[in-house]
Length: 266
Image (cartoon, rainbow, N blue to C red; front, side, top):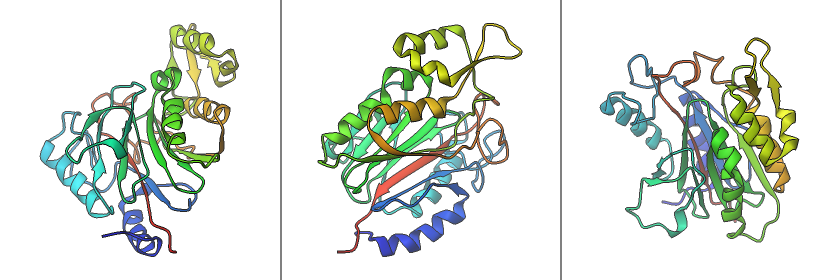
């Protein structure tokens, strides 16, 4: 079955009832991030945990994933995320190729659902402005530093003549909560000293820094030609009731951000 824009309007009404977060509408693309609410998992994974690698009951996680899948137009492309920079090209994969080890994925296929799991790191959804190609990336500080967003954009540009791109940055740990060491600050400065704008000396812990992950991502996206970037501005660490946070609670679940192309009416 091919899902069209009209069909997705009806489908969207269902997934929006699942306790989700999304951004402004994009032509030809649907995307959202789940919250921790509305699932089957028990504490400390309560309740909509999507991560099988967290120590949660796999039956509960399976039920949560099945609930999500019923609201989507096609199969989810699950990744084994390792805080790296590899990008999976879904269009070149066989039907039985999942999950693969990568921290981003791209596709031009309609109704092929890209998925990124997070619990503080940035989930970043990308698309060409004409909706021809989409991407989704998992970007913690290591991925940002080493180029996961740039690699994702590079793969996407190979698939379209469109020169304009947009991005949405989903819920992630906020500036006031994300403490890093001197080695992280130094690594970013060695990479690009302009990134100093997105760090602040920790007011209470000498030798530590507060890092603005979302702003770092915006800087790097814009530097690489992404015209429109929207930030959710939702902090996973501070919003205990809505989001899982690994920094707040090491033993915890994962949200998932999903994105898929839809067929626009002729």
